[in-house]
Length: 149
Image (cartoon, rainbow, N blue to C red; front, side, top):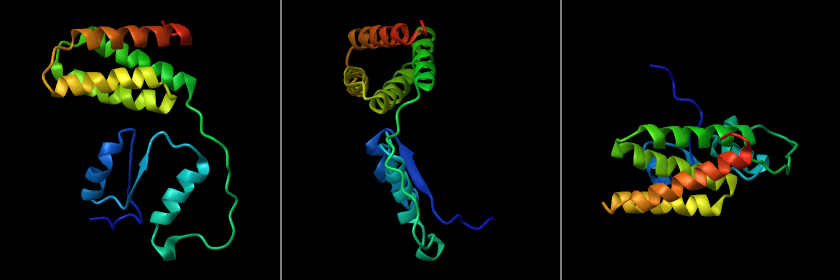
């Protein structure tokens, strides 16, 4: 068996996954969206054992991380495809959680709220037709605006 790497970090767009990551053995957790390169670097370096941390001064960029429009379009197209082709209720939970993370990263509050409502209603065994129609419409609107529909 290989020796353990110096640090294992959980990374998720769903902040509720932090406890699960730590319970599974992660040394820390980074919630998405990652706002800056400095924040990302700090999270990694602070989780390293002291002997593995770099010494001396290091350049820290205050650059803000912006979502990649192409990746966002690809993620939205994936959601649209799964919505159109799946009759499996397991896919609904996946779509709701995935889309909430995508929306959070894109700072798209209406889309995040719709995805969160879908996840909540699905877990409560409520009717989903209105939620699914709303999600589908929002996703199609975002794709059209991004030139991907």
